[in-house]
Length: 341
Ligand SMILES: NC(=O)c1ccc[n+]([C@@H]2O[C@H](COP(=O)([O-])OP(=O)(O)OC[C@H]3O[C@@H](n4cnc5c(N)ncnc54)[C@H](OP(=O)(O)O)[C@@H]3O)[C@@H](O)[C@H]2O)c1
Image (cartoon, rainbow, N blue to C red; front, side, top):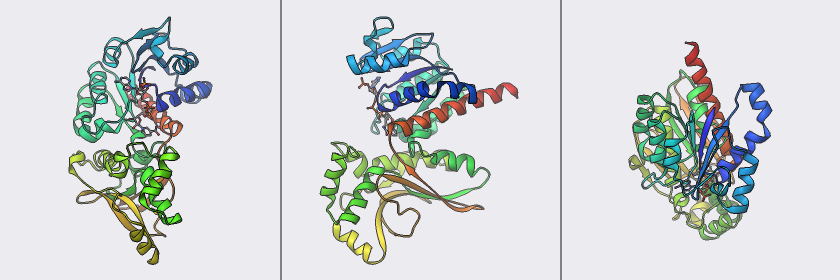
């Protein structure tokens, strides 16, 4: 499969490492031979229709800051749109930064890939939070696949669990911890009896929280993931504007101490029932959702199978890249099945 990789940061490079280290196994076990024909970062692109040397591209990024510095394959200043339009490939992997205000630049990359007949795998929540119903329609119209497992739960297969493992059942409601940073902060406040500001600083020191923590602590990241689940799993045609969002900034040490007296804890819970909500919620310490640290946990309630909870890490380069790989394999399998039927 020829792939254009847009974004050569933590996730893009982790995907390359997995492809390098598991090359033989991927070919033997799955017949999967990824050929990365273009890589794009902010400096430009590197293009080789025969497949780029990934070791070389990793070193180049470290030494020169951009893959476009390659003497043989580099195109300094080439935009991702130009690369997507001009390079022949079956798929595009889009791993640029999330922007939940305009969804750009990822949204335009995804639309251009569709228009030029490329399947898309993305880990970028922005385009999906703002326009998932339209994007799935556009993918169908262009006869290509759109996959985005890594957007919810990173490597933890939250979307696949609901969509594939619970196939045939009807999911009635979903609730979960969808953001590891806020869970880390709330867990620290509970365990160490510290304030929100102290716990936030600790999270920033460990690299769990960004210098500007708005996306996480104000609940937008969790809300974006909720929207993706509502659309993909429960066929609700919603965007982030439909979510009632309250973050954790006003959760006090006193609130947590009061909850603890009742054998409870406070978590930032996203829920899909009649409405979509993200808000700090008191839950029993025995609730399967009462996970600590940077973990994510999601409980699905379905009509016949009852209640199940899936728990795992919700971030990390390698973890998220493993989801991209799963999506690429899924697309490959779907293409193969189409050829048989
Ligand atoms: N890391 C995680 O644990 C994780 C987990 C789940 C989902 N995600 C999502 O996955 C996506 C990628 O995350 P990441 O951690 O890999 O981010 P990152 O390390 O910041 O990498 C982003 C990459 O995108 C490139 N880029 C930025 N603007 C661009 C543009 N206009 N055109 C072309 N390339 C552009 C950057 O180029 P330069 O290298 O030149 O700056 C960089 O290579 C994000 O949307 C993130 O929210 C990440």
